[in-house]
Image (cartoon, rainbow, N blue to C red; front, side, top):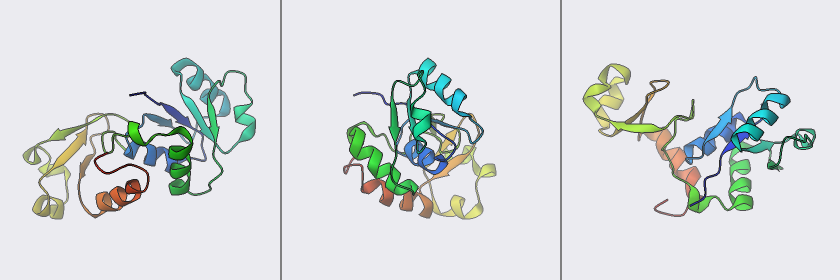
Length: 156
């Protein structure tokens, strides 16, 4: 399996979260300027994702992808089609917020970090050891799963 790693420009925060949701290491910071993006891409061998053609003209950028779609879900489909990402996807393994790896955690260890309804209705949780967020398979997860169903084959 090939490993695809990305860095997204300031206009693609929604896409960055969706790529993380699909399990792709994606750096994003709204404050990255074009020079920082080029340096990160070069030093870490990441593919630059952008809607700015001038950014892709920088000499340090060897791999980049200009996205035509305007909305994050369309950008995700476009990128999955163009780079054939479906087989490499590992959904729900990375933190949507900080890009760190998630790990399964016992419900008893997160009771003080989850809402009462999550405690009452769900039993399976994962956490990010970097930002300490907790995730569970609630209604938001169901919507994310439905969005991924359009690009990731069943069982992915």
